[in-house]
Length: 304
Image 1 (cartoon, rainbow, N blue to C red):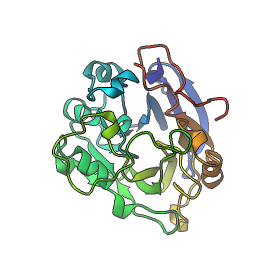
Image 2: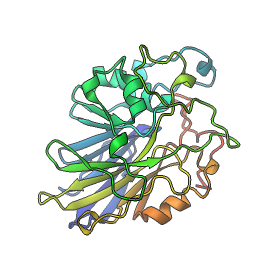
Image 3: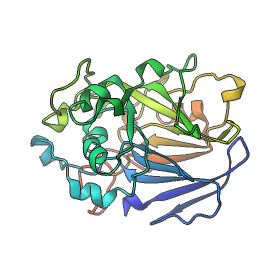
């Protein structure tokens, strides 16, 4: 089952060297006391844990079919309940952009599954979700993001055991240089959520750099995350001072529409130089996760 895929990456030393990598189906087998577990949930969703520290990248389970795209958007609680593991302890949810397959399920997850969660993303995300999620739990990161020149600002978990930085990025076209859904940005709160999936705006797009930290504040493990393929020059890590420099242990990159972005994922691999890559957003999210898994239309896993 797609959502059960798990990668466990164990840690050694402050540089975050990888001792062992295991991809398993079902529940993880914890082999070391100190390890990072990355569980792929489908689309842009990943549940990332290190001991008691946990964060979530925006998941999506409702998966309306091609035909259902013509009808009013419908969240499907049964699919969310079937696919989403226990996230009751999640306090941080990262949203890369605001198309429906990254935000439509978030109000249900907020109210029913993740009561402690704070949702971090763009100003558009905050305006989009304002009708459904309490404003104090929606945080816009536009002013903290870096364009890859000077560093942006770190956002720390409450107990300062991990942190993240938004990196300015962009969204690949869907087909032949065209975007088939809205690329709009919002500058005011919506009164209601969009009626149709195509009306969910793209908003400002962020990649994220995520650091798990040792008790002395040094970097134990670094993750680079994207939920959409980006153009050359976008989504880059800035030049850090020595104290914030560390190798990227794993990069989570996007398969969907990757061939529509010039030199992707090569330009990210050259800039980020990750030890390992997890391919995300690769499956056909126009079908239920309970159906046989297929690759997202017009994408080639072999080519990626």
